[in-house]
Length: 152
Image (cartoon, rainbow, N blue to C red):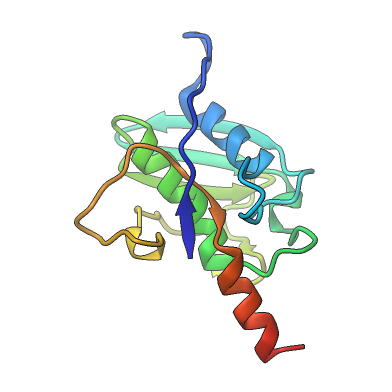
């Protein structure tokens, strides 16, 4: 599950908010109880916004699983999608590509040739009718530990 981590950020008005949110997500959580969802080598190649859609191109490191994290590909994907859709005004959906490839499979499982909308059912303590004011940045490690107990 995703856990919201609220941050106060100062950024220049000539910066693209979506890019700032992505960079913070890639940095990982400040709360040491949470687990990061992206490899630290992940880079944002480009961000384009239009007609309520944010098109994001990430480098190949986005497909790598960071050490110490067992987050499911869907959880990682929606950490990004929810962060963008819930934080950035006017963005209702996200399209992703890896190094320009829109037909890639995210972490070998999720086809990227589709648009993604926020899914708050993955957020701990949230439901699809409740919204929050900050992006979900981390994964609840207690859930990852539970899965490790099943698979030593």
